[in-house]
Image 1 (cartoon, rainbow, N blue to C red):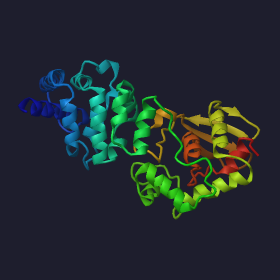
Image 2 (image 1 turned 180 degrees about the vertical axis):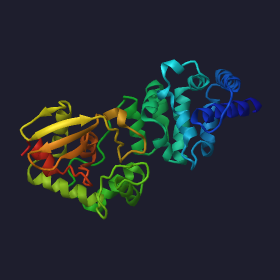
Image 3 (image 1 turned 90 degrees about the vertical axis):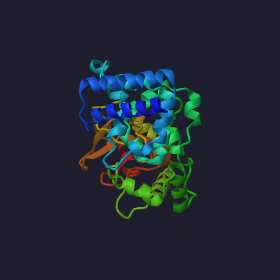
Image 4 (image 1 turned 135 degrees about the vertical axis):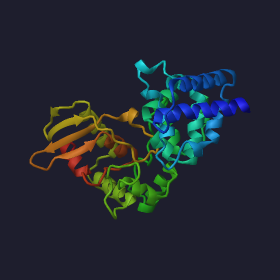
Length: 317
């Protein structure tokens, strides 16, 4: 127990130095890294389990810098491979770290926003499949980690045809998938919290918006999957013209509103500036490919990528 406590305190010392929460001399950092490395080598998985049990010490109101530093292995440059920080991260097992992350996420879902998507992708790809399968997470988080690991694509949230559903039934399906009250999810879509992009207008209902657009498509014998596939094809041809207009892609990082974990590494291809004739320019993130395919959500906020605009620009009508 003494050795575990020392390893934990040594880990926190290195993380706080990395996060700028404390200043330590190089000798102290090296000694701390040695303590973590030695303990992990002799007690595999024990420190990672301890991390999960002390989630409160890692996810705090001051912004979670310690949590970000712990899961920052994707940001360690080649020039920093021999530093105490890099040595500490290398000593922690990917399977143990994913279990620790799941514990942190259950304690406070902000962990999903604090831990870089690239880092979670690196961990998930190195972890065992049975570890990923055993994580106690709600559907959106479970699917996010499996997608980051390259084991499965992100699945549809809604059935292919929702035109026979009522708005509150659609809302319920989103609530089940995200394990989040619809009011909280709609606030995320309005740009509150870590989800800073505004995708839903004030007073607009998610279920009603999805149903309205689904019925518009159905009247024209189109499907959301056809629109999504056509949009994906256009993103594969950036800086090009079509009969409807032009598309220029920038590398803006946009988070998926239906995931607390950053899944941008799975489908991120930036944001497009789209013009159609003399109509005002629209900015459409490549994320729309996923939100349309998976949930029939056309991002109806400030820069509306509605079915009418997209089907016209994509030449589907």
